[in-house]
Image (tube, rainbow, N blue to C red; front, side, top):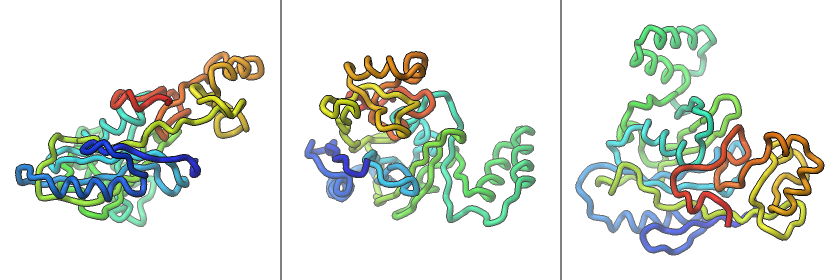
Length: 258
């Protein structure tokens, strides 16, 4: 993944920039904006670096009045949603160093009793978990890094970085400023054609997991799982090949293969 070309187009000028340079460029455009006074933030979303380098990225402009729940829904719809799994934003700096199993169970008891606000406060104290009801302006500030987790079983972990903040409202609640273009992954069998389908059993664990249509037919003869359930589309997301994820609902034209 680290050798793949990662580039995205700017929503304002349609020029193409690398993952490393896109947000420097976005800041120039946002500094030229003259929107109504308020608060907004430029966010960089990527796979959590603890899992290694990856080419996927989102560049978002979020209004300060937008809730964390709205950001959660956006991330699900563009990159993650497969089976309605649970998710959470976590600020590691706010997590209590010591919080045992019984503390967590006490927090869940509050939820069972319908004491949602108290539950959110308890979980924020224990894990640094950010309540989804909280507005972006109450959470974000320049250089903040949050962790985001989707699916606590086959977890996809993202990092949310606040690149900059602005004394104005955003054009919408959440604006997709840029996203990495489809990566044009090659078929791992013939190494010539573009991969359009993967085997979720073999992908990441064998030398061959990504296939063009012709080579996929050959794989059906050697992998029974591929015939029955493990054939999945190649999509532009860090959750590709995980659980039952088959693609997003936002920016569909850049979600598939080249």
